[in-house]
Length: 151
Image (cartoon, rainbow, N blue to C red; front, side, top):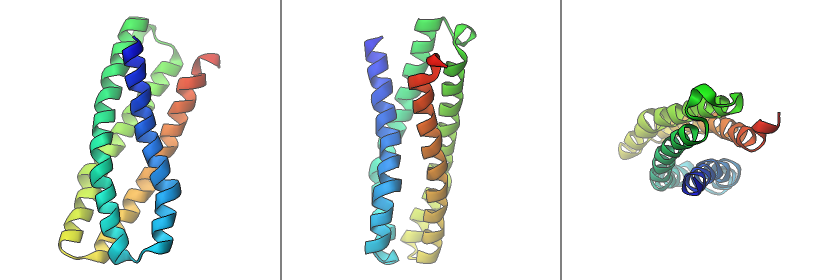
């Protein structure tokens, strides 16, 4: 169980912490220092390096989450409501990430390859808005995970 908990926590820290850093620190700095023709390729490279970590985190969160629910509760039927909330919000986050990866991120890369900076900028703005939602959900999941059993 210690392995599952460790992998689960590390995966959530990597994913949510990465979103927090990107949204709260990197985005404002890049926006204030770089022109779009430099900022957009920067973000494309950041996502290209971060998203494989997110895919790994998603796989580990799903695997370890199901492992722990089955081992600790004998399945979702015996799990506390906060476990259901955590699993539901986590699943929603995974679906949102899948959308970001397969829709606006893919279109942003295509626009950059075609040197269509206005379109790439629109896609980056879309990604930014969606990541704000996913970051908020991730922070809620962390609160539920750490304090849920005490409510």
